[in-house]
Length: 372
Image (cartoon, rainbow, N blue to C red):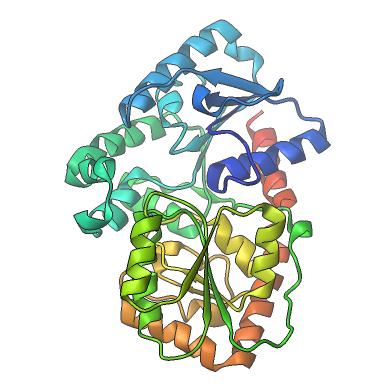
């Protein structure tokens, strides 16, 4: 039983994409499974179980968890061999799963305390929506407390990156954590399109929300006195403000909105630099897709791409919020075409070798077998 909270989708990114890839591999291995989501993500298919969950976090966690507890009583949970919880979405169900002794695998994609320390304590109120402002004022501490309590129910704990593993050790004192990197279907990636063009293309992909640091990315680009094209893929509540801010900073940005997977992979392959000014991530699928398409990445350390990129690229990752340093990294890549291509080539090799969804699924299946 996979408790993801979200609809498993290749298009969604994050937990939903990871679960999508896992399910594909489970089908190949003829492993029977069910996916537990909230009713918000209801989809067609026999493998789905949809539970009521209402309210805002952390109330939503509690209601989701209570309904999961009822499900266990109804489904006779001892028929299931493994319960795989994906946090933070499955925090509520994990909280109410104390009786599932030796059957629980927990994967942390991010932590609530990570959001608190690296995002809400650093972002000014002007970039936040109403709900995020409430979290910044201290409401997120409740979610952090619930997460710490829920963690005590885990039999086996995994993290998607070194950064998330370190958070679990630093914030919650959890030392025995195995890293299993997220994976994608690398066969769908396009090879880099190395045709000569008039000027390089810088690409941003992601939701248009405060967490992604896009305002700071635009600020960094505004300091560069070179010609480049800047493409922004994604949608979100900050689009109008970002368009206005781009004009104010004299950065010519083309907003493409949501694009399909095939088109997105085409954009990766035709671009020259992936810009990731995120203030907090676990292990971003965008980073895996971009690096796997042969792109160097200009990023803050909060974007958590250090597991994905080669050593030369890692040297260009700068402290979160340091706009000057980010601008210098971008400018270095723009000025050094050969180095840019070399880094992109090494990034692609690393992703093809280590971030394959088959490898990810194989590692999880091995953990399931060990517990059984």
